[in-house]
Image (tube, rainbow, N blue to C red; front, side, top):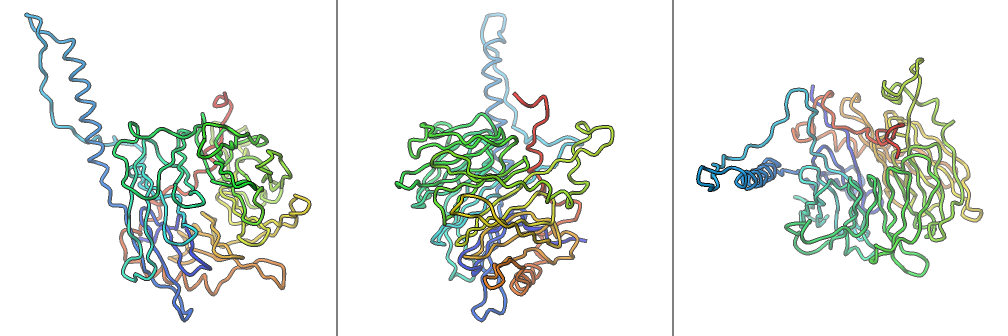
Length: 446
């Protein structure tokens, strides 16, 4: 039986008035009805890029290189080069047992003014830029720029003036491109990376310090957080050292400009003063998460002990609420959301709230001033429980699931069950648990 694929990413305009989601390689936009009766679909964009043409072009270029190389070696009896006939380039096809190729859409970001949407497509390793017209009920999304890159984008951010998009890729390079204008035809010839790491990049942010100076904060698989000047990004301002495992996610709140939170494969969430380079505090979550771990957190067999009880876990994502001093994070492949109060006077962590969800959390995003939205691995729900909205209750000083709004949005998503672009079989779900695989073992350390 086909089901609607779980939502991989979500982004919101306003207080959940317009919500964008990613399902497989499709972006969907939902708008709240004016009478608050529910949501309706107002935007849809599917990635129809055909990678076979680009693969054929690469094969053809390699053929030309080999023919030219062989022409220098192959001679007839008179010493003349022997021409070799060029055959039509064929698209390589994975052999039996090869892993499936997924064309995901990643990294959904909405501009502060709600006029642009930014994302990444695996199909051609590109950054996607859309104009948003939420008054257009037929389709609010219009693709205005598609910029391919040499390596797959892993994370993106935008500058404060929203004129520049900054992309960090899988191989450690960071690029910047204008949000407007035509895409470059050949990145390698026309654009150089603005900074780099010697490891896979996992997250990137643009921040301004208290003097209005711009910086790029980038995190990698080798436990590093790098602070670079912008636009003079070849100048490294500082490094933030303290993690003992990979850094998977960083976030900087609006309510404290010098704060940076980071988390990843170790047992702590860290609080930094990124301007001074000091670690201010750390929150240990390892004991809290232990009761919620399961067989999905067992280390690969080659790294197990005799008892086969070595576990591995990591924070998948961490965000800050917009207007209140709280952060939220979750550990990959678990149903628990942690929300932690931040004492901004003493620069420490305070009370921790735990919310248990019906299914594993996949992604998290802010959804309003005192609200966040989660997406869930609901493959066993029969097309229910795609998302949950979490509200702050000021009177009770607590957080709770907003079941009323969540149900309205879930019902709207479930109504798309006949859309074959977003449905799949349970055993063909795209990879949605990839954070823990960033962990390195023994021989992988340099």
